[in-house]
Amino acid sequence: MNGMSEQTIAVFPSMYLPSVGWMVQMAREEVILIDREERFRKSTDRNRCTIAGPNGKMLLTIPLIGGRGVKSKTKDVRINYSEPWQQHHWKSFQSAYGNSSFFHFYEDRFRPFYERRFEFLIDFNSQLLRTCFEILRWEKKIRIEESPMVKAQSPKPKPETSNLKPYYQVFEERHGFIPNLSIADLIFNMGPEASLFIT
Image 1 (cartoon, helix red, strand yellow):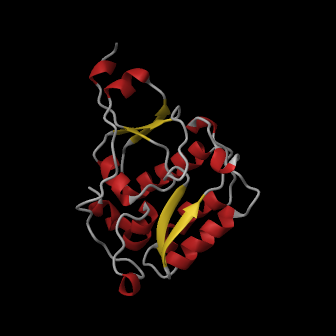
Image 2: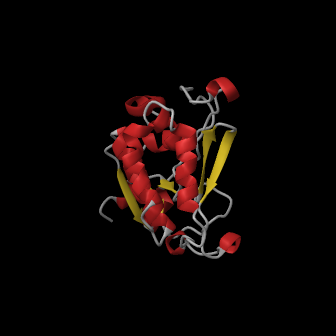
């Protein structure tokens, strides 16, 4: 058994730049287990994130092979490059955060994800999440696997939606503070202090 039955490792879905609420939950865990065997769920954070642009909320969606009819396990979901979504997403980040205090400080960490092609969504999401962890100076382990023993003993976390700490946003004077956006919003606006708002 090797003590596996005593572990309580939260099992998270693979997500594209998770919301601040999800990051609050991850902050409470020492190990982040990504469930690669989970059935993909459309219209979720798995392939989309929300940021705040000049006109308010902006939903960024990664197109997938099979479109809205994807019924694969998470590990098998492939990204569709038949449309220039990477260019669109990066231009959206530039529009939303080009005038923020820390976009230019971190853009070289994020840009490669919108230039390099990843075949599988789970690889894109997990490597981008690791980059966010590095920026936040989190020394958490991300495990991408399916362990029935751990999963059976693990809580099923949900994103924190209340008591989220407000922080400065570029277009706050225009739209008011918009809570629970992508972790990218918090990083580009608050820089090194980002971790203080999710721990």
